[in-house]
Length: 301
Image 1 (cartoon, one colour):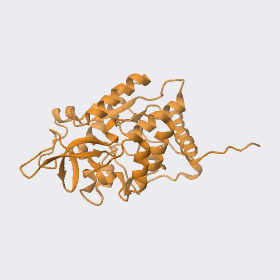
Image 2 (cartoon, one colour):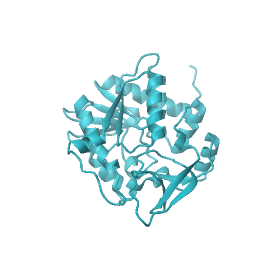
Image 3 (tube, one colour):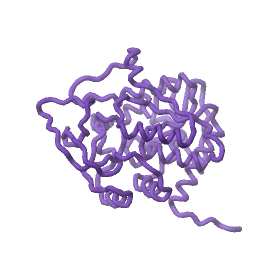
Image 4 (cartoon, one colour):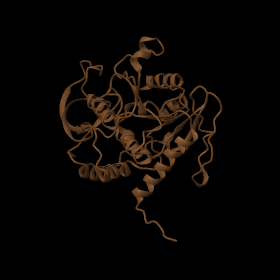
């Protein structure tokens, strides 16, 4: 009997494709959560490998804060046009206008946490029973606790103490009415794995992932991109720095890092020598030691 010899990227890819096909087989109305970041872009490539030449058995869903990087939105629209798949956009601004959420005020105000309500409303409106996301266990402590098939209750909440075993790569998608499942096909990948896969597959990315000159504001020791959405005061000074972004989120909570990495090989070398995780550049994770876990319990991605 012949044996397959796979390198580690092949093994990770095969596992992710298997998970995506399990979602298609076990759920009636799944969706792929797309942020325009490198992890969700990788998921789209994996979905192409899992389901082409057919169409995806799910739409892409983007929860738009209205404070996204312009480069990310442009990339999203160009990619959707290229692959010919359906895109559903949930608007945080609409949630604000309808009085479902209240916009934060103050110097460190952000719309990032407001996405939860918009996401849950979008799930309910379209009847999604599974949402595929690009979260990875190496990103943050709360994400390290999640199973690949992670059940949310009828209120969209996650209980870290009530999770199903996933022995021998058997994924249980059975849910009760009103519940849904978050699915994380690249949960076992690291940031470095993602970048090595992007290099191997020659995947295009938004330009903000590569070093560029940008006006920034130093906020709580972090370099925030200067934007009209950032509440500035007399203490803030705008400086020009050569930076890139390791993670993509709301412009008001996603910090840049100083960098000279203009090519993927440079980024891989930079990450290999870094002692700070990519989530170290997310201001919303610094609210408390359990900031991410609290948001996930409330229905966050």
